[in-house]
Image 1 (cartoon, rainbow, N blue to C red):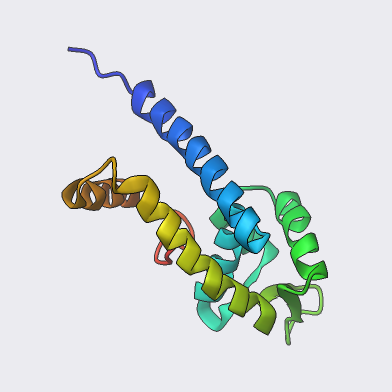
Image 2 (image 1 turned 120 degrees about the vertical axis):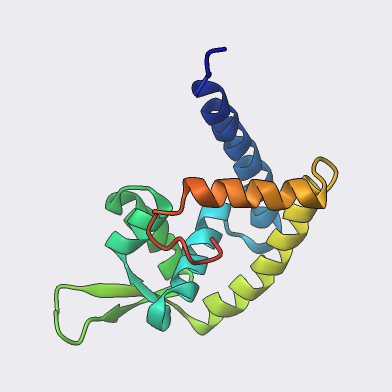
Length: 150
């Protein structure tokens, strides 16, 4: 028997796109933010000192630094995130959550948990959910920020 390596990758990408579309739509309707915005804020919240450089955010989100800039600019304009200068290097700044952003994120996390449960529980048993989380954790174990929730 020949192992087909592309099938699990293609199914993972398809599932990811489907989940992103469904959850982003619901999060946007309720909270005005996307799933990617939520992940970005979760990474910031869970980082040491609750701050991350744009480069670190790019690594964690698996996107380019320019994509992070395009994502953070609107969030900064509406007051969900801010910038904090580095004390030792004036060229470096960090993304931080504002109090408004932290409050929104707390509510968004609750909605995300509910949406995730609504999506997953009709399809997977508790044992399968645990297995899925473990398998995906293995695949992403060497990613930056792998010890955070997002």
